[in-house]
Length: 127
Image (cartoon, rainbow, N blue to C red; front, top):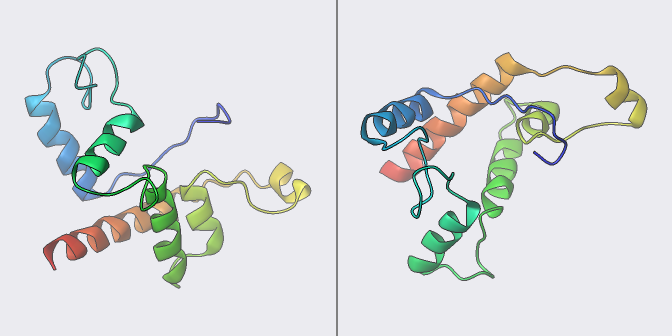
């Protein structure tokens, strides 16, 4: 994280299933190691390389684009307040005074958002 603050992310049931599946086949301590070394974490360049191999250009999509896609679709869902979506992205919201006093993490609401997002992605994947 840029801010060096811990960013807690509630996991959806789908994310937990992926992690459990990967834990069964992993080789070493890391769940998603670099393709070059089991002791080095996968970098965003691994994702970028995969995007290029399947045909997306740098002008079409980069690894960071997925944050924008999540933000846009989540903000369009009126079930989730602006602050919840922004907290999920680890964005500070409000004036300097508001940021100084509001230390809310919105974990319960963010857990619902993450489950909704996971379900949404499954629907997109399955048509």
